[in-house]
Structure formats: structure tokens, C-alpha cells
Length: 178
Ligand SMILES: [Zn+2]
Ligand SMILES: [Zn+2]
Image (tube, rainbow, N blue to C red):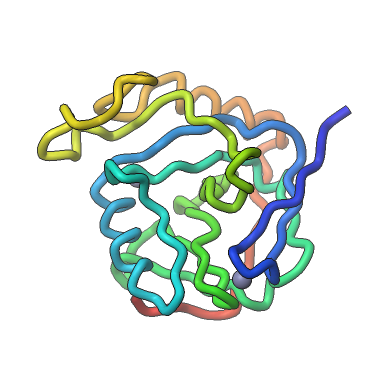
């Protein structure tokens, strides 16, 4: 029996239901995540994505385990550059960043702030710390990995096999500039 949970944006208009546990939960320190967070933070009333040490916490979920309950019409995509393969999607009701979608990915990285603080999935590792000029300031509570590991990709591959290699499409209502 898999557990369903409803999570959502800061104002409560955009809500998603997720089914079961995430594929994995991590904090990303890559240049793209930090640059995107800085730009999205400029949107009016934006909800900040980064931790105090510049990490982006997120939970990877299979696309077929995510369902928008309300607010899908508010979703707009943001790309770091017009030709960027990956996109970050924002709920424009209150400018809450909702997820990162890599090009061709069968999963979404749901930003951890969509969960209430006491229900937030806990990261088990930090990735891409090699992008930081100085990674020594990171807390030592969980492993700080310089890149993505083989097991990271294996977990994602395992999820795709379980999905029968399908890749559901997530549509948005337009783009957002930040
Ligand atoms: Zn909202
Ligand atoms: Zn990243």
C-alpha cells in the first residue's frame, strides 16, 4: 500500500499529490541550481529555495507518482538560457518554485519547501559540491559528494524500468523571466 501526501506552494493554490516515498532526496550544490535559485528569488514574493549554505534540497519522484490537484494553470517554466535543456517550473500564484525537470527525464526534482517543515523529506547526501569554490563550509551531517554517483543514476534508472520506460509529459502555461 503506498502512501499519498498532498504538498504545495506557499499560498496554497497550487497543490500536488505524491505517491509513496521519493526515489531519493538530496541537496544540490551545482552552479546551475545556485544561479537559478538566485534569479527565481527576484520574482515578487518568491519563496527562497536555497539553504543558508547555498544548497537546493529536493526530492526525486517518478512523474507517474505526481499528480497536480489544483493550480496547474499557474505553472510557468524558467530556463537559465533559451536553449537550456532543463527547466525549472514555478507556481506563479505566489512564485513558488515547484520542480526541476532535466531534459528527457522520467522524474521530477520536487523542491523540498513544498512540504511543511515537519514533514519535509530528509536529504541523505549532497551532490555536485565540486562546483563550489570552497566546500569546507558545508555541514558534515551527510556525505558531501563532488559529483553525482553511480548509485544516484542507478536509482533513477531503476525507477524508469519500473515505469516501463514511459515518460509522461508535464505541460506548463508559458514561461517566466527572472
Ligand atoms: Zn501559490
Ligand atoms: Zn543542481
